[in-house]
Length: 96
Image (tube, rainbow, N blue to C red; front, side):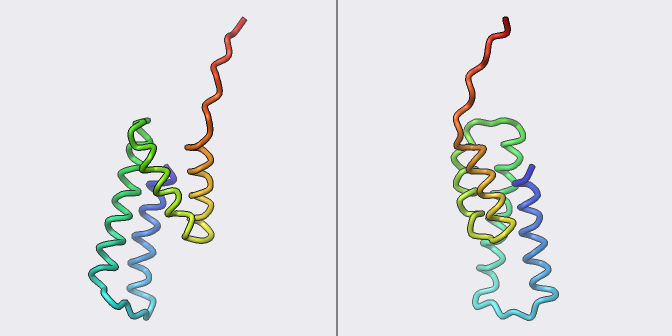
């Protein structure tokens, strides 16, 4: 679920920066294209993780590493994603 929320936060942050921030972007179409691609990737991975698809695990790890660069919220998301995706599953215990 955090990946889906992060995708929305990135899009809203980009739109808010454009509307309220007076920043100059060298290549605006490249900025919007990269923001859209990354946000769609986070949303797709988040959706597939919600469906417990094991094939998306590597993509989720890569996006978790990418999220580490966005301090402080992205760093927390990246650390949690790496911690939860890289740990070994505990063996099932038999009930006596």
